[in-house]
Image 1 (cartoon, rainbow, N blue to C red):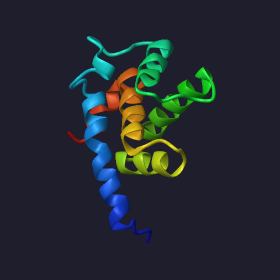
Image 2: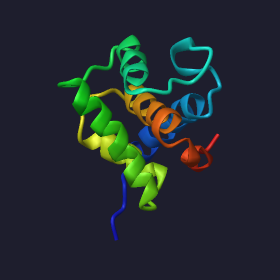
Image 3: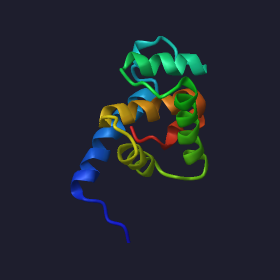
Image 4: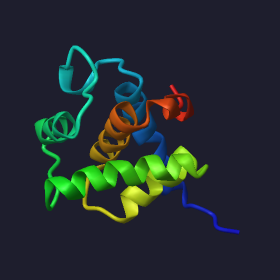
Length: 115
């Protein structure tokens, strides 16, 4: 059985509130009045937080991948862990990307995000 270290669990716990805030629209993404609804809106919101991708297509593909993970039943903790392990993003940025992805591309999964 795979056991995560307590520091990894703390990092995941720190990311989840950011995801919830973004995905559930608590503050809107980057202060937007309404959630973004297009690829460019998503990319602009990420850029506003200092999050850049190798290309716009890569950013959109990542967001869609996150939604595919949720579609296939992967839980938020596993999605967070994947983001932490496979990127150079800060924990906050991982949460922001996941929350933004859910808000724009798969709002039907917002209920999977703990508040």
